[in-house]
Length: 237
Image (cartoon, rainbow, N blue to C red; front, side, top):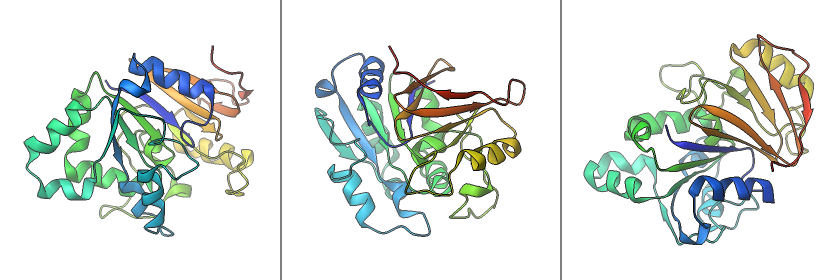
């Protein structure tokens, strides 16, 4: 399984940055990255400026501007028209995949259609860093609250690489509907253990084990455990 760093809002603090370096096993300046902007085109309110900010490093949600040795762009909608051996070699040579936010179902659709989803299980040495939808796409489903773009087959299923779900942007001023009460209601109907995360939080997954990396606030919901597991997390040591 890939090493996953599922961020809410990018690499926002020193704890998440340290977790990233730990997963890479070397400094960021020695690592080659591929960024995937695709999700930024999919949402109902999407516009072309968002993907450009992500790719160019002009976003306040830090991903491509961390000082990588190199950064390339992997646009999933283009991959079906490119010789598979070529783009697979690009992915396999990268140390890290940086996956943009936007619409998780649009991203899941194009991960499957492009063939990237089928390739992911073989990328044992690659680090996957998701931002919002780029993180949610790795879960089993997103819940109706987060359905924007609707896939041809309907539903809210994503890739199911991990066995938990994510409610992002907890109590964020730009997302006034993403309250703790809304997270509780969402979690009660999602059918999986789940996490609600704020912009200072990420979920690190290595060999199936989940570690919360946070300098902010997050909540864990488990149908088989205490439903009131509300946590103000300390920085990861």
